[in-house]
Amino acid sequence: MPTFCRHNRIEANCPICSRQSGGAVTPPRPARRPESRAVSTPSKRRPSSRSAGDLRVRRMARAVDDGYENDLMPGLRATVEAAHLADELAFSAARVEQLRTAPRGLYAEVAALSDQPEEAAWLAFQIAYLSPLETDEPFAEIERVRTTWASGELPDLDGVEVGSRPAHDPSRGTKTLEAYRHWAERVGSQAAGFSGDAAWTPQRRFERAFERLALRGFGRGPRYELLVVLGSLDVFDLRPWSLHLSDAMDPTTIAAKRVFGIGDAMNLQRRASDLATAAGVPMEALDLGLLNWSRPEGERITAGVRDVDDAGRRAALRTLLRAEPHEDEGDEDDDADDAAGEA
Image (tube, rainbow, N blue to C red; front, top):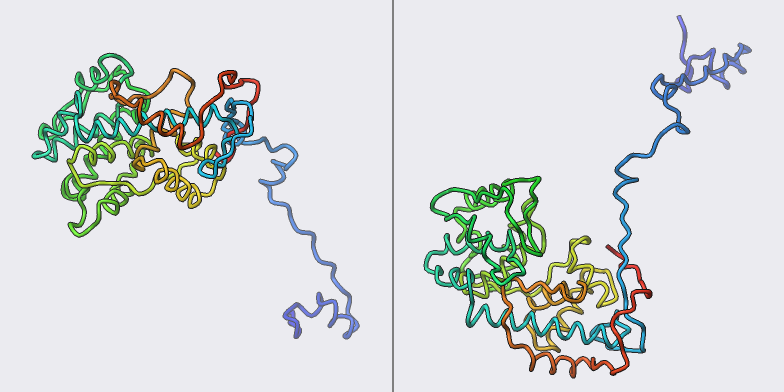
C-alpha cells in the first residue's frame, strides 16, 4: 500500500522524500491533452463572424477649420458649423414652443385628449413610434393605422411607411407595442407610469419615466421624443433636465460628442446644460437640434412641425454664438473628413 509523505505526495514520487529514503523518483506524467483541443488547434481557429462583421467605421464631413472657438462648443472649429447649429437650435426651440402654445395635426388631438390620459398617451406613443413623415401630410400613415387604447387592438403595421426618426423595425413586428402595453399593465396604467409620485418634480418624473420605458426596440430617440411631446402638450407634468446621452450609437449622442468635444456622459450633460442656459432654449430643444445639425443639408427632421417662425431666434443665436459666416465661406468641405469617434 503506498504511503504519503509530509508533503502530501506519494512518498516514492516525492522528489524530496524519495532522495532522503534512497528511493527512485518516478518522473511526473506529461499532462494529457484534451481530445477537443487536439482536434481544434489555436492556429486553425477562425475568427467569429460577429467580431469580423459588426465592425463599422463612421466618418462625417467637417467644415474647414477657420479658427472658430467658443467655450460653449469646444468641439467646433468652423464658423459655418456653429451657424448651422444655431439655426437648428432655433428651429427646434420654435417647434417646442408651437407644441406648447398652438399644436397642429395629431399633436392637437393629443392635447385635446388631456382629460383622457390613456388615449392621449397611446396616440402620442404611436406618433413617436412611427414618426411623422417629411411630407405635406406628415401624419397620414399614423392616422391610417392608429388604434385606440380602449379597443385593446394594435396597429396593423404591415407595409406602413415611417418617418425619419422611428422606433418601428419591421423584423420585430408589433413586439415593441406589445411590450409597451404590458408595461402599462404592470404599473397599473399609462397615467400611473408617466405620473409616478405626486410629490415628484417634473424633472424627476421625466427621468423616471425615461428609465421605465427602456423597452426593447424603443430606443433613446423615440423614447425621449415621446416624453417631450407628452410634457409639451401638458398631458403629464414632464420636463427634462438632461439629454440622456448614454447610448453610444444614438445619432444625437454622436452629434453631442462632436459639438462638445468630449465623450464622457457627465461632461457631455454639463456642457449641454451650459449651452441650453446660455442660448435661452429649453433642454429638450437640444435633442432635435443636435440631431438635425449632424444630418446632411436639406434633410432636417421637422417631426410634424414645419410652419414655425424662427427667423428672429435664429439671428439672435448666431449673434450669441458668434456664428456669422463670412460671404466667402462655402458649405462643408467633403474632403475634410474627421472620424466621429467615441461611438
